Image (tube, rainbow over all chains, first blue to last red; front, side):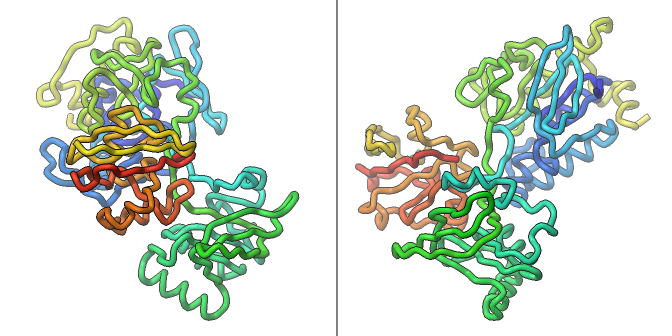
Length: 337
Length: 106
């Protein structure tokens, strides 16, 4: 079990800035996120879209903001646990124990939930048989390419992931690329490669149609597509890959005994503590009278939460408010001597 | 103020007066209309404000941008008359618009 001062759930901008606010107060933290990279919605939803309301930054993209925040917290050498979803939170006297889906355990007096609108998960196929085959012959991500060799693979989706994997897997398997409309959205080069492979018979494109049903017992045998004109077609299929993007799910957070309002966690606006002492929420996931879902509001919330985190993590020390411009302690922690 | 009809997939309908300039999504959220989640808050990044537009209205609405159409690919059970309600801005011309919320958003 890893011990620290504060466990931060969510590696979006607010989680990253929380590292900073805790760090300058001399507190250690770890950051856990369900995605495989830091940045949260900034990276997953709008890496290239400009943001215009970060104070003193007239314009930056989600990716730039994330990079800058990472640079800002570099002095604290914070450990990130990515691809880990927090499943369980339980009390242990004055501390909290956090367990992830991969059985990692953490112990700290404080938790800051900066989880945005929950964890990102792949959007699943809506036909009811889909669940039965998931993980065996139906996948929402490609882990190990080896298992997709010499198969009949039906790939669903019209974006980059679907196109890229269609190209890659066509090297050693027969691919059906299935999309609900005629147009695909991908890099021009990828699109022209796909067209070439279609001519060569390596990839067969099925549009505009959607999945109607999946047939099979233990393994998938075939799928039935329904075209916009009402016609149906049965296609021999061993493997289904589906790339319909990510959706946000609140997930296990709802089960931790926190007071919730709709899909958000209720906090007080003094220190952003929830109804459980030592559990804080900041950013889009918290709610209080007047709450605005702005990144800058999340920064403020993280700053105030970090003060209470200090009091809980260092009960025998007195908290002293300090400015970064003048505090020797802070400058040392930032490596500015 | 234009009246917008929000129908659920069972056919239950609520009519709400929505101020000009707000989106059909905002009209729903401010009036606690179930069936529209709008996780991303209207930045066209999530497809959880997906609605089906009553057929007769399809041609009368401003056309969807490419980015909206791409995002609708990610919606739950998209159809020909699918739109993202965050992109439908209420004007007097939309008086009486009916949108149907899907069975679920994710």
